[in-house]
Amino acid sequence: MRATRLVLRGTGELLITSGLVLMLFVVYQLVWTNVEAGRQQDAVANRIADDWRRPTPVSAEEPPPPLRLGEGFAFIRIPRLGRGYNVPIVEGVRERDLSRGVGHYPGTSRPGEVGNFAVAGHRATNGEPFRDLDRVRRGDAVVIETDSTWFTYVVDRTRIVKPTDVWVLEPVPGRPAAQPTRPLLTLTTCHPRWASTERMIVFGHLTESTPKAAGRPAALGGGR
Image 1 (cartoon, rainbow, N blue to C red):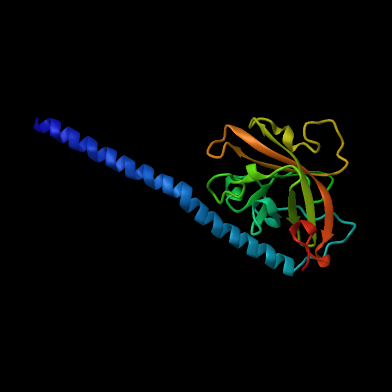
Image 2: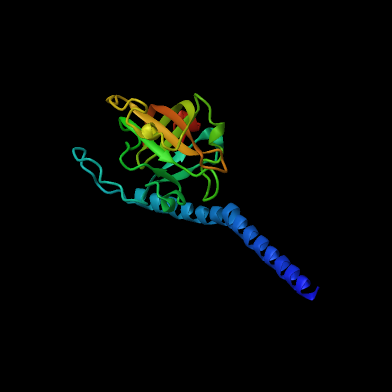
C-alpha cells in the first residue's frame, strides 16, 4: 500500500508540474509574445520616424535602394479595424520580421507600384496585427503611409485558400502569365485564428495616391 501511495503521489506531483508548465506556456503565447511584439513594433515605428526626419537624397532617375530584411519602411492603417490602427511594415516574412509588425513579401511590388504589394501578419500571438482581418469588407480602405505619400487601396474581395496557394503573391494573383497594369494589394494571414490549416487573403487595388504635403487622405478623415 505504501508503494502505491508513493506512486500516486509522484504521479499527482508530475501532473501538477505538467499543468503548471502548460499554463506558463499558454501565458507566454497569449500574453508575453504580444507584450514583446508591442515593444518591438514601437521601436520599429520610432526608427522609421527617425529615418523620415533624415531623408536620403535619391535621384528621380535611379530606382530606390533595396530594402534590407527586417527594415521598417512604411505603416499600414485599416480604418475598419479602428481609428488607432497603425502598424509598421517591415521587409521580410520570417518569424523575427513578423514579430516586429506586418511583413512585406520580398520580390513583390512596393507601395504604389504597378504589380502586387503583398504583406503578411499574425492573426494570433506575436502582436497579432491581423487578428480582426475577417472584419474587413469589400469597399473598405487600406492606407499605406510611406515617407512621402499616402497610398489608398480599396478591398475587392476576401478568399480562404490553402497554405500552398502561392498564386496569391503573383503580380496578377491567379494569372501567372498576365502582365500587371495597375497597383494591387494582397494581405495574408492564418485561418482560422488559432490554427494555420488555411490562409485568409484580402485582395485590393490602388485608388488614390496623396502626397503627404497635401494632408491626410479622405479615407483617414483628411486634414493635417
